[in-house]
Image (cartoon, rainbow over all chains, first blue to last red; front, top):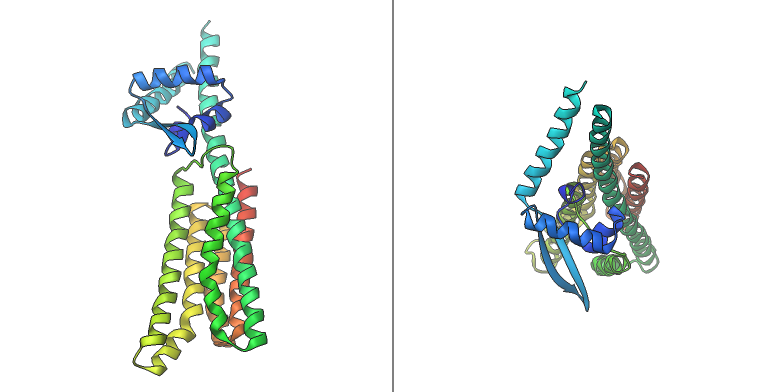
Length: 79
Length: 205
């Protein structure tokens, strides 16, 4: 989500490279985020190679922003 | 327990910040190579046209400028194809791309207007004036695009380079006049563009 929050869209290979996650692990995360409505996934082809593109939704952006705010509030409350 | 939870929250925030920052820098840094590519092309084409114009005493070699975008987009496509992943855009890279696309459209349009006017214009003097100011207009547009890029990239050197190339280029043009020497303005602009790419690569390391 940290990556997708700052870009227009990103494909599976890019996300895998940036996160260092395994394909299986990343697929599970993508499925969960899609089910929650936080990202949209578009499957297509680049030449003959399959290509999965992920894009954060406005709901995803809002949820991510709220999460970061909550973390900050939690930390500042503990000080 | 509380300490442990706090560390986890801190680590989460730090990880998010680190990931976002690293990703942002990575995308912008990758854009640096396109500055270098177009800068090298501009330098090569301007020197080539300068040389041909000087040796044959014919300004018709200026038509070679229309080949540069074809070569440039071809090489950009090849660079993208060799990338491991599809190009990813963020606000900064998209804005920079739009700035230079607008510059390209304006520069080509100004050149086409001049060509049409010089072929079909009713006034011979008007055609000469339009032709005489073509390089000046394009170098000014270039300076503007470079300066705005510097603003977006928050880099004073790039902003200053844009101003010097645009305004300095315009002033130099008025001294040099409408001859083959004006091509050297674009050689300078090409070097500035390539240097911008190197600055971007270093700034966003």
